[in-house]
Length: 103
Image (spheres, rainbow, N blue to C red):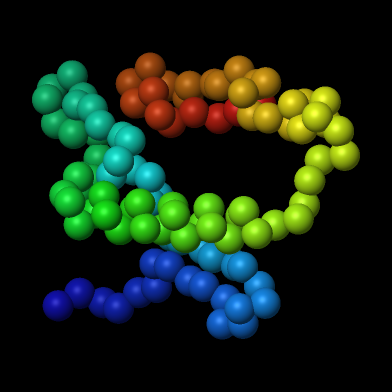
């Protein structure tokens, strides 16, 4: 057996919608691909269980986000804050396209 570790956290108090993961829940649904030699970019499970878990977490986070009353002051301020306004920078041609940084 391996060592115990914490991969996901949630605030004890329902007053705070605080969650944290030490993993990327979206990977199993959206990241596919093989290196030039045919090996997968990463050892990511695409099983029904992995996708169902990922979707459940996404639905939970969206449910909490929809309860927020925080809003931008104007539609223009909201549009200016969107990440699509920035060009993604791919770190290396040898790495998958999904490894990007937005500046």
